[in-house]
Image 1 (tube, rainbow, N blue to C red):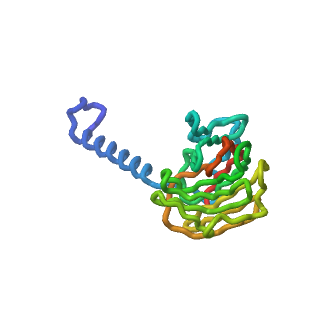
Image 2 (cartoon, rainbow, N blue to C red; image 1 turned 90 degrees about the vertical axis):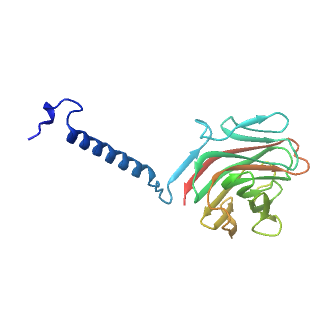
Length: 227
């Protein structure tokens, strides 16, 4: 009979072998757990942000004379001074199938603009955008390998459901599989299918055309839900 307690360290090869096997098993179990993908149930809330507390992992910056993204007075504020430019800010959550909603409001600048939501953002050359303009138009866009295509129509469509000017609009986008659905102020305005982009981050977008007039847009009550 071998009594492990009476053996000196390094003298018992059986004990040493058993310990090595035990440690190896623990390492394998740990790796297996870490490799198992986290299952997120449909309808699970991933992020709710009213921009009054922590920053939620949003990308913020300031480029003098060009653009800025910052949390100001309880809202995420995006500023754009360059013509014919889009800027996007994303949070730190990446999930392929999402429902995104936000309240958006033009604070200053041209009504000829773009304001919206972004899903499956991989970089500035690959993402889906759900956008409105403050003069009443909307579109679902795909930017893929640097080329922009409007998916819901040949051109931006006018909708009376959009509050024009400096009035707040509630925007909602669903990216689930190949289905892309856009709703404005609780009215579904577009539903299209596209399978070019399957994963990526999410966020908010503003864009300018020829005359931005110091475009300033604020966002509030951002919500992110798994689909």
